[in-house]
Length: 196
Image (cartoon, rainbow, N blue to C red; front, side, top):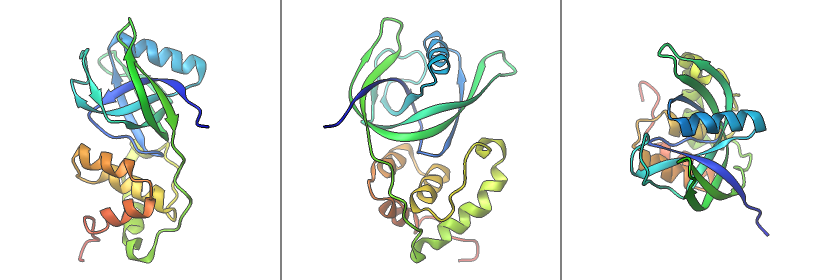
């Protein structure tokens, strides 16, 4: 029997992967309230890819059915006085149904999806682990909360997927792939080491 839970939703034009960073600039009252509740209750919120509507101010939105829970790991006041957040992707979930509260916040009933199995990076994708090992230290603050797992196929696939120049629908397809080796092998021909 699958258990479900209710999660506030943050529809975005980007895809959040488990273990990956997300920085947000919060200005709408519904999301300021959501952040306050998440921090008070030590809970996260769901990031889902926006397929119809706008990120800000839109009342009618359509989203992908698979998303990732975001955990707030840091918050700060931005130069313009708005609230800045640094979040970290947690587990993936399936959105079973969604509705809009009176305050305008989108909320969903979700079921958590199992995490990627811990699999080593196969030899035919070893160059992806090398690319990430070289790139991550150069990415600065955005990745300061990301714990490296350079030998884990799912973790490497997720980092390559979020850093590659893919369009959001292609990233969403990778997020939805159950097999981390399939994710890696989809990305392997796209990403090459310099000189290859």
